[in-house]
Amino acid sequence: MSRDRISGTFEYDGLLDVLYVRCRPELEYDQTLDIGNVLVDLNNTPAIKRIEILDASKLFGASVFELKNILKMDIDLVVSKDRIDVALKLEVLKRSRPVPMSYESYILNDYGLSENTINVSAVPASA
Image (cartoon, rainbow, N blue to C red):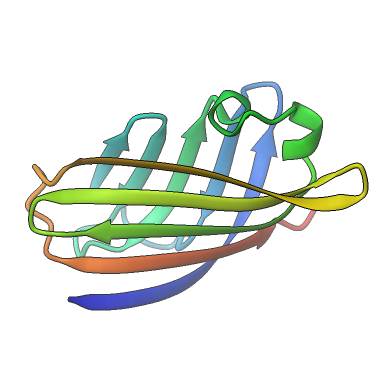
């Protein structure tokens, strides 16, 4: 099983309640993994192009204000023979203190992806 570590940037759209994570925007799109409210766009290698987290405030139990003040974010995508697991970890600023939040989910590996672990460390996108 291989392990990939990549960097990215994130940005939260409070109007749509979507958290966007850009990993490798230069890659050509091939397919999307639909893991509930988490959409992972891949190229044909497969490498992560971008991630969209829908209904982010409900998913994390956070306010729009908190999601606009994310300090850091880590995403682990673990592909095994039978399933694909995703773990989202972020830290938001709440009452001037960093507060951790997380979400985990999985789907069956019906995509034929080979075993791999991908870690994405993301920072806020520049304004």
